[in-house]
Length: 102
Image (cartoon, rainbow, N blue to C red; front, side, top):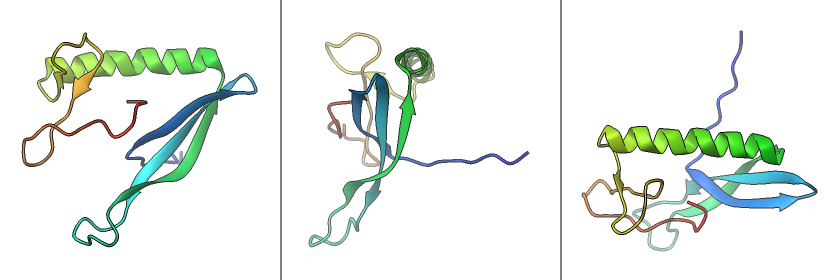
């Protein structure tokens, strides 16, 4: 059985159009060492699903966030409840959110 795997650095935009939820998957492109061409998020693929499918996916993601917090892999942001997490960069300093959708 063949499986198709998709990689994304994150979700660029989530919209509701035509009664369907559309999530744009993005990846980082560019060179971190080149000030003329800094990394930027670029659209790669779109996931389209009905609202009830999106809600089930959201619930599954919330459960995974709780597991990541319990495992100590991420920590909740100060002053925010449960589902919002802060990630850290390789240097150990907090990274700002990349998108208002996260």
